[in-house]
Amino acid sequence: MQRPIMRCLIIAVILAWNVGNDPLALALPFSYRTGSETVAGTTHIPSYTDQGQAYGPFVFNYGYTQSFDGAALVRHVELNFTFEPSFTTAQQQGFRSTAESGIEGIWNNRAIIADTTNQRSFPLRVDVTTTGPVFHHNILVRSGPGRSDVSTWYTGSATAGVMAHETGHYLGLYDEYIGGGVDRYPNPTLSTALMGTGALDENPQMLPRYYQGYLDYMTGLNPGGRFTLVMAPEPSTLLILIGGMAGILLFRRQRFHRSQGRSALSELDRDS
Image: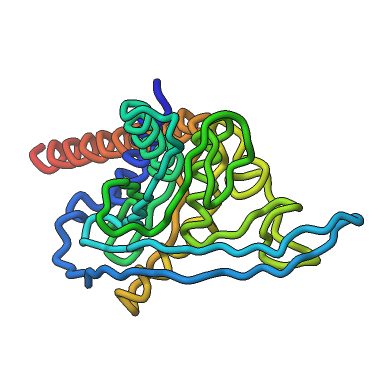
């Protein structure tokens, strides 16, 4: 099973679990405040020296439009790719398509926001487009090898993980490895996940802090609500989750049938 399909299945299981105790949960008459806003700014990271090696300074421009329409929370990022003259029109179109699908494939279907009061769940998404006319970020695409960064992507190194990592910067996240634009020094936040060394993995780990901004936005739109961030389990744990849910449902069904049986016996006793 392909990873995006598996992740969608995982989210479906979580959604079902959230409303499993109340079949009418999705029909609750609760009105959420929706909205949309554009976020933009610049993060300045001073230089630092680690084990005798100097790094930085770094400057990250972040920018995106975030919205909540009552069904999902979305961060929209419009990327303006410019290409070296050697790229054909078909190659440019292919790169844009690969970038969109690669970034969204890593960021999406990994987390939800759950309303624990009203038993509603909302998916969190990154929507990447490259058509404009207004762009959040400008990226030069070069052919061949090279180290990709926030402003220049090389076809030899711009894997889905690397592009998703750079998109993390566009969303305001720091690097999580020594040598990058870390949140502080000394004692920086480090990881082997997407914003750390995991950017080089085929399927990078996504951490809850990468989605914290969605929760902050939802809470700001709907103050007083009881919202929590829920990460989807990795595919390796999906069968365990499904098995556990199946066991619980089977237990409830058996208990229901036993209850029905006792009720029937009681009726017989009264009739006799």
